[in-house]
Image 1: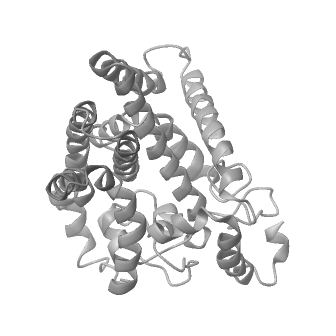
Image 2 (image 1 turned 120 degrees about the horizontal axis):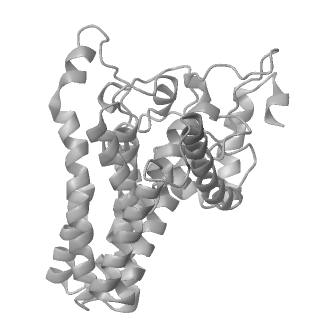
Image 3 (image 1 turned 180 degrees about the horizontal axis):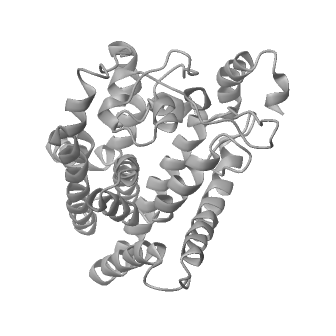
Length: 349
């Protein structure tokens, strides 16, 4: 829950030091500067829960569910409070940009919480996940991720699986557009199968994007252009952070095509894994992505490490920074992809 507390703590530090505009940029400093260092110092954690002794109890422990649902409520409060702080006029223009950037990073971490919730079966969790996504203007992720990405992951059909040698800056525009279009296509197919019109109250995307529009209108009515800029700005930072994470989670990995024309079953080896302790705590074990894709219904607290899955050289926080520099990214990651497909170089085409 610490990311939710960081903006108020940073604001308090800015007031106490007289450096408000500097501390407004605190979230990127913490996430992309301090956490990678702490990840290196604290090391990795490959401990798995025992399937018989631990997993049944951990699955039923309400604490873990309260953490994710509580995140949604707290993020709503944080958004309202953050906009009020911005509108108070205490920041310079660079400071205001930094504040929006910092809140957007928290929203990006919130998408990770929404990701955990939308994979569950209960309506409370899936709706809470949809609400959290709507508050960062990315409601389509709820549909496309579950019905699109998890079906086509690590194949050419997936907009969220980056290719070998593809740069982040080539990947991002395609991900934005294709994921939005795919979500509407998948929802239209679902409704048509049920004999229902696409444009109707049963179309869940209309609800999620409707909530986004309502939030934008509310911010605009309350604070004018500043409110609109705040809502759209934090949304853009949040879903861009999500797509950068998508980029690094499957880079260069491919499911092999079988003789019958279908792709092999999704297994741990089709996602990059990372066990750096601190980032895993921050991200509700998202870095154990290999296990998540192989068994998508497993709750975050019981996700497992797999030795045979390809391993990232650092935690997500450090890898996001690396991805921003394509030559360095290729220098670090391409040899790992090539080693993984040694003897099957055609897989890299």
